[in-house]
Every structure is written in structure tokens, then in C-alpha cells.
Length: 464
Image (tube, rainbow, N blue to C red; front, top):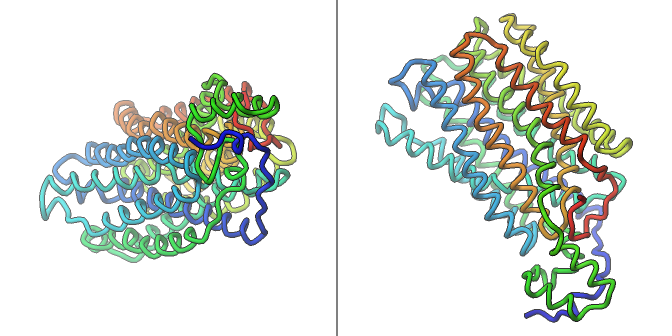
């Protein structure tokens, strides 16, 4: 057992230079960009070509549903990764876990690019696709949570929202890169070229990003908040029985600090974070995944229009995300969350009306508006608010679980449900209704949540 007297001592502040903060910021941005590039590459491929390559013997509608289902299974693996790597990150530190996750994600994505198709090996092709999707999801399950925790714990208090928004910019960068690659492929390749070999190129190109991300994270220093935690000794968090022993031997002040972290009843902060996640995750699955396939198969517009819309929306997001982060630092997380989630409700039906019009300008405007208000704006706030809700002893695990459970309930199931409802009703209104429901869940959660701006992140207990 570790020396409880040492554990109870007040720790000096862990100092980090501007260079350390810069490296952490770039690492967090790049890893998240890689995660979302990998997932967006897959989601676009699932919507555009995978139904023909891996599920060719069914109707177009059933093929789209099957392709969306393979997209969804990755979110089940993400939950397992969130539990496994989240606990590891709270136990031995953030940086070690982030090194492992980027390796696993990159390798799985690259291998998708060399898979044989259904025409070559039959049913084994979609089976292998699902296996790689599961491995990809297992690594990704803790990547964005880890990057979020690392950046939030590195950031100066007054600029925490802005710096944490870099995680959201990473998602935006990944979406932009994936959408840009697919836009180029759709513009320059014929249907035959795309289906025979062109679809492989984006997955193979992700290998270079993985190599750079691995190199960058090798030199990354640990989160200063993790090192300052009163329950961390020699770089490893004490187990519960060791903390209890330290409480017995410590002075009153240290007893209060340690006891707060292990004796608080968990649950309130987690369910509020889950609700905050629900709107962004659900809206993302509908706008960034389902609508691409819906527009390509159901509307009489060019096949490149939805990917171009995501491209333009992602470009605009480079302004949306940091502005929302700054507003959160200036006015508080709660007020901006309430405003954005309510705005997401308001624009849901106009967005879908524009998209379903079938005109190229309508599709473009609708998707760009929906992406920036109901997805990227909420994501910018989510990055910092969810991390601030949790105590440092379980922050990585709870944040990862809230993100991934929200992803399973909203993002993974949403596109499949939307595909089914639109096939049954022959209308776009179920998609708009789903956007409203997702956004209202986030609005209610923000209303019930405490203000977390400026919270001391070294504290072991949750904010509520």
C-alpha cells in the first residue's frame, strides 16, 4: 500500500509552459480530427457506396439500412472502449491512454481500405468490415473524451472554453477532411472507378495522419490536474481502500478533500451530462450521416451536393466553434447552452424543409445551418461543460461513458430509425421531429445543470 501520509500532503502546482500547452492543444485537436475523419469517412462510404460493395443483393432501401447498421455497430464497441480506456486514464494518466487509442483507430481505418469486397469473398466481406468497425470504435471510445479531459485540465481557467473548443475544431477538421476527400472522388471519378478502387483511397490516406499523431503524443506531458490530484502517488491513482487508509491518517483538511471524492453519491452529474450529449450526438447522426444517404437516394440532386454542403458547413464551423467557446467563457456555459439548444429546436423544421425541397441551394443552406447550430455549436459547449461537471478522480471514465452511451442511444440508432421512418411515411417530417426531440432533451438538461465555469478541476467530487 502507498504511504498515506504522502498521499495526504498538499501538492505543489504542476507547472506547464506555453510550449507544453501548445503541444497538448495540437495533440488533442489532431487526435480528435483523426477520430472524426475516420468515422466520417466510414459514414459517408456507408451512405454512398457500401450498400453496393458489401450489400449488393438487396434493394437500395434495405441496402442503405444495412449500411447504416454497420455504421451503428461501431458505437457499441465505443462503449466498451470508453469503460476500458476511461478507467485506465483515471488510474494511470491521460497521455498513456491517448497514445494507445490513436494507434488502434489508425490501424483499423487503414485496414478497411484494403478489404476485399462482397464480389470477391462473399459474405465474409461484410463480416470483416464489421470486425474492423468494432476495433475502430473500441479505440475511438476514449479518444475524444481523453482529448477533452487533457485540454480542459491544461487550459487556463479564464480561457478554458476557448481552448477546449479545439476538440470540437478537431471534429470539424476531421469532417472537413473526410467530406473534402469524398467530394473530390465524386467529382473526378466515374461510378465504376469509385466502386472498383476509388472508395479505398480515403481510408489508406489516413495512415499518414496516424503516424504524425503517434509521434506528437510520444513527447506529450501528463495533465497537470492529474499530477496535482491528492489521490495520485507516483503517477498512479490510489485504489479505494488505499484512499480510505489515507483518510484515517490525514489531517482534517485532507480528510475533507479525499472523502469528498470517494464518498459522494454518483449519478446526478452523469445523467445531466448524458442529456447535454444527447442533442449534439443525435443531431450529428441525422445531419452528418443519415441526410447524406437520404439526399443521394431519395432526392433528385447531384450526388456530390450533400458532401459539398458538409464541406461548406465545416468551413463555417471554424468560426462557429471558437466563437461559442468564447461566449461560454464570457457569459457562462448554462446561458449559452440554453440559447443554442432552443435555437436548434426552432430551426429543425425549416432546415428539413430546405433540404427536402430538392434544390441545390436549399440542400446547401439547410445542411450548413443545421450543422453549425445544432451540431458544432452544441459540441463546442459540450467539450468543456461535461468535463467541468465531473470530479478529477472519475472524470475520464464518466465523460467517456456519457459521450458513448449518448452516442449509442442517439447517433447510432438515429440514422437507422430515420431510414425506417422515412421509408414507411415517405416524408421528411420524422427527421425534423427527431431533431426537435434531441434538442429539447439538451435544453432540459442545461436548465437543470449548475453553472460550471471557473470550477476547480483538481477537486475529486462531481459538481452536483
